[in-house]
Structures are given as structure tokens and as C-alpha cells.
Length: 450
Image (tube, rainbow, N blue to C red; front, top):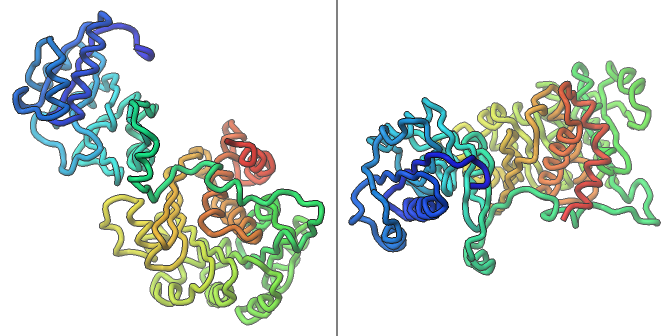
């Protein structure tokens, strides 16, 4: 009633408690004077428990579920199946959803669009694209994974009287990303600060794609790292030194040279991968960084280089490590996880196997620690699909890890700040350089959020 003009409504009810919610909605709408028709999958006398009680409060006609209910292009309330659906939708329910989708009827979903798995976010056979979804108590992981983002429309979490203490019994191990999760770990200004107190990030620069390390270095500095060094090959030194004057630039032509830089314990975090190149130097630098036991972020080429020998990479993890792959890099490193149900489960499995925190990029960025804790980040913009955006994300993460944030906190903070930068830019034409310019305001927004 708050979002659509009064008009014909069809309520599609399933055989469980989700269908019971549909009966309640139908009763309230009819009482308010809306013309309502209700279709039920199955027999009314087959309902049990709360669903049976809810059906008993409806004194209107109960029609058999049929695509014909959708004649006349009504507003549809989808109360067929909830978050616990365990098998693909077919039969008459499938035919109804297919027609609903074909005609793009306005739809409000109860709990989830029918067919969307509440935990994995997978579509079981089919699921409608709703304009709004109303769920209860807390959002479900499926709401915030890719198909949920595509199909739920505006998500409303309704308070139906469930006590907050119930959450302790559920003991969730995943959270929707937001500053209250990690803002306490962000470093505030201290009158006694000096540059080394704020951490020293060291990045491996490549000889060809020099912009990647430069973007990452700028992001690390904007994120608060006190110093940022780019370790570059001799052939590219002039390029790096002629660029941003605040970036320190040193020569490191091979893995051993990079390893010698690591002898300085004030180098608190390292980033290897952006623009580094698929070459032995990158592989050796990654292993040298991991051998320090200090903070390490591996991205892009530093991930792909271990695709044939992932065990070598995982065996070298001995400190706080963050891997930041996109889907292609993830599949190369964890090819056997493709068959798992849902992105959240895949990333958790990858983190447990590797011993590193894993950030799998996407519109539904999933971050998981080896102990199973996970964060889903949807605070982002499609405009982030631009070259160099991933380098900025990696730079944010290493800049935060240089300040002693844990990989999980650094990854979650970096993902949120990254998205906030894009949202603040707020107009067409976003490029990676624009993200860097927005970082100070985005960090301040994170510190101020509640």
C-alpha cells in the first residue's frame, strides 16, 4: 500500500509458512479495499502449523495456482517459496513464474523471490525479478549475492517482533559489510605520530604496466600508510621516479633484491602483483614477502603465477596474508571449488585451504578468513568496472595492513572505502584515478558512520 497505487492484486501462496504470509497479506489488503485474488499451490487442508492458522483467517476464495491468475497484469505478491527451498522449481509453480517473468509483472516477494536460495544465492530452476522484497529480522546471505542483487529489487527488513537475543543462538559467521564492523581499527591521528608509526608499505613495481603499482601506491598513501616504496626494475626506474613525488622508488631487479629490502623490519606490509608481470621476479618477490611473516597482499599476476602449483603458495603462508583475486584468477588457483553451491561457500573453502584471507571481487565481493568468518560487500557501483580499479583496491588493503589492521578488517575496510569512492564520484566517466582522489572523504565517512 506504501509503494503501489490501489489496484488488482494476485497473491501466490505456497504450501509452507511463506504461503501463510501470503494469506495474511491478502487479508490485510482486502480489508483495506484492494481487489485481491489468491492462488494456492496444493490443497488448503494440506497446510500445517502457522500456515494453516494464517489460511484460517482468510475468508475469501482460494483458487488453484495457475498462470491464468496473472490475466489482466495485476500486482503480484510472490509468497510461493521462502529462503529454505531445497529443490528446483518446476511444474505449475514453474509455469506461473515463467509467465510472471515473461510479462514483467510488478512483483513484491515475501522473504526471497521464489527460487532464490537464502544461503547460497543460487537460483533453483527459476526465480522472478521482484521490484521489492520484504524479509524478516535479518537479511539472508542470498539477498546480497549476485542473483539476489539482481532479483530482490529494493530489500526491506521488517521487524515482526523477533527479539534481538535470538541472534546469539543463531551465532552468525557472516556479516554485511559496514563501517561499524571495522572502524574501531582505523588509525586516528595522534599528536606523537611520525611516518614510520603509520607503517611502511612496499610494492613490487613491474617493468611494463607501471601505472598499476603507481595507482596502488597512491591508494596506500591515501589510506594512511606513512611511507610507500615502489621496488622497480632498472629499466623502469625513470618512469616511477618522474611520477608522483611522494612515492619512494628503489631498484629491485629480481627476487633476491626484493628479499634484501625485506630485511628492514620497518617495512610492515608488502603488495605483490599489480602490473608485476608473469615472470620469475614476481614469483620470487611473493615468496620473499611471505617469508617475512608480516602483512602481505597478493593480487593479479602474483596469484596467477601459482595456478599450476597452488600448494607452493599455500605452504608459504605464515603470517597475515590477503589474496584479492577476480573470478578468473580465483578459478585458476582453486579450480575444484567451482562446483560448490554459492560464492560464499567457495570463498570460505578457499580461505580455509590457503590459510590466507581471500577477497573475491565482484558486485557481491566476498571476504573470508581462514577461521570461517566472512563479510559480504555490496557497497559499490557498476562504475568500478574500469581498468585500474582493482589496483586501487589492493593499494587500500596494503595501506591499511601496513597500519596493523588484520587481513579481514583491512579487506572489509578497503572494499567499503573503494565502493564509497565510486559512489561519491557519482557521475559517468569514473576512472581509477578518480577513486584515489575520493579516498580521504571516503575514509572520513567510514570514521563518522554509525
